[in-house]
Length: 246
Image 1 (cartoon, rainbow, N blue to C red):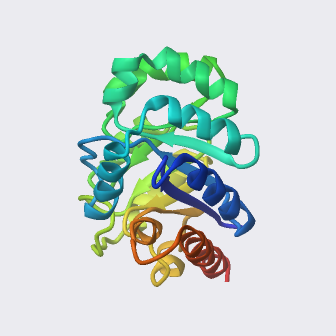
Image 2: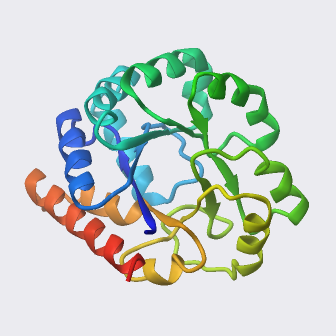
């Protein structure tokens, strides 16, 4: 069965909401929660996720909120922290490793940490039975794919196109998928631009999809109550899970 990873922004509109949403997403069939760490300059994300980040920060998000939320959800659903490298660097990667182990978080997704820098931190992360998710993109050569993925753990994050999340762009990924499958048996998940309408098509040839902006646009819809947001996001997740496996 193909997997569904759901990105949600930590602590927006508040921590209890994030916990409720994550647990409801599990019931809707989501396999992983990608818990986004609010950051002031999320360079890989489009305007929808940027807005959620800004709102969370304006409401006073602190890293301790991430740890508190994770302790409530990670024991129940596979959870990864998605964040830019700045907080990991300034707080210390050791702190994140320690807190991840406490709360049963599985590892980290750090989109602005290139392979050449990631290899500095990966051994320490993996020594603690955590993972650092590897990225591949259409711009990567076959040789680079082989280098990046030789020790890939948990799943591989395939970026669907060069650009930011939430775009409707598309590229022919057949050759990239073939290159990945030739060098790694680690599950391959596709992210960037995946939504309810295109999820079935995007899921062809891969083992799962990563969805973010499709959920976050509901998260920041001020016309909805908290209960309505959770219900709508969960229904969307359930529909996507059904479509990628139909």
